[in-house]
Image (cartoon, rainbow over all chains, first blue to last red; front, side, top):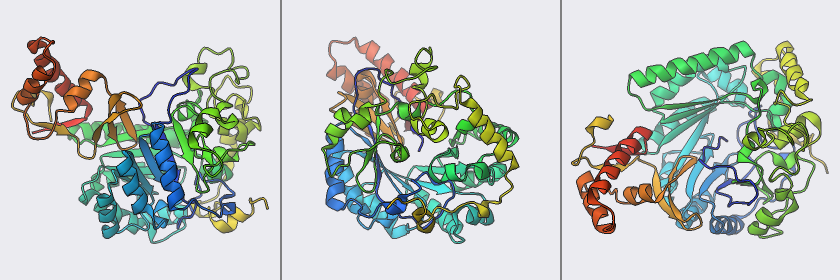
Length: 383
Length: 96
C-alpha cells in the first residue's frame, strides 16, 4: 500500500488516525509469492463478523479516520462486503477496495457502486498470462483481471492499477504500462515489491538487479514524456525497492502517526506487516480503538524519537525518515528499534548489500518460489 | 484542459470520483481521492464547496462575494480565478 495522504508527520502530539486499512480476511484465491500477509496467516481462524466490523468502522470514523481501504487477503471473499461498504459510506469514509479482481463481476461492481464504494484498485501481475500465472499461481486470473479492469472503468470509477514489480516481470515494464494505458487507467502504481511477509521469505528470488531497476526507471520516464505529449492524464508512480535506496522511507509517515490497520481477527496494527514483530498488539475485541491508538504500549512504543538508537538518535534526518521501517529493522537485524539497515549510515547496511549479492546468484524461476497459501503457511503457525 | 481556457463562463466540477467533505475532527474541508487526501485551507474549501457542475465561475464568484461581504469583491474574483487555474492544473477539477 502506498500512502499518499498529504500530511506532515507530527512530533510530540499524537494526531488522529486518518487512514484505516481494514484487512477483512486473509483468505485469497491467489498465491502470490510476494504477498505482504504474515507467514502464519493460516493460524487466524476467527475473523471479525459483520457487526464487529461495523463497530470498528464507527469507532475509527469518530476518531477522525476518513480514508478507508478494504483489503486482505481478497476482500471480495467476504459476502458482507457490500454491507460494510454501505456502512462506510453512511459514516462518511472515502472507501477504496483493494482487490485482485477475482470474485468481481459486473453485477457486484454495480452493487458496490450502489452501496457507495468510491474506488476500486485492481492489481495486475504482468502483461502476459504466462508470467502472471507463474507469479500468482492461477492460470485464469490474468484474463479475469483484464475483464474486470475494463468493467470498473466502464462503471465510471477512477481507475488505479497496481503492479507489484520484481525481477520476473520488471523487464516487461514497457508492455505493462502500454496495457494500463490501453485499459484507460487514471493512475498506475509501479510498486517494486518490498520485503515483508512472503516477499521476505522469497527475497533472493524476487529482488531485481540494479541494471533491471535502472532500465525500468528509464522506461517509466520515457512513458511519462510520451503520455504528456499526448495530453493523456495517466499518472505513473514508481516505487523503488528499499534495498536499492541509501536512505530509508518514512514508513507509514511514522509509527502510529496517521495510519492504522485492523487485521482479520481484530488485531490493531500500525501497518499491515507489523504483527510479526516480537510484541503484542491489542485487538478491537479487547479494548476500544481510541484507547489502543492513544494509550496502548504497542502504539506508543515507537512514536516520537526517544526510542531511537544511534546513528538515528543524533542524526539531523531523524524527523524526515523517522528511522525508517521498524519491520525492516527487525527482519534484518532482530532488533525492531535498530536503524533501518536500508540507511547507509546504519552499521547493519552490509546486510542489505549482502541480500543484493545473494539475489544475483539466485536462479529460480517465478514458479519455483514459495507460493503464499494455507498449506505453506501452516509451517509457520505456532500451535 | 489547458489553464487559459478557464474564464467567467467556464463550468467547473470536481474530478469524477473525487469528493469534497467537511471534516469535523480536522475543522476543515478535505478533498478525497483514491487513497489520498488534500487538506484544504479555508479559501480553497469555500471555493470548492460552490462547485456544483451547474453554475459558471462568475456565478461562483457572485455567491462568494455575498458570503464574504467584508472582503473586497475584486480580490475575491481574482482569488477564485487563480484557484480554478491552479486546481485544474493539479487535476482536482475538470471544466467545460
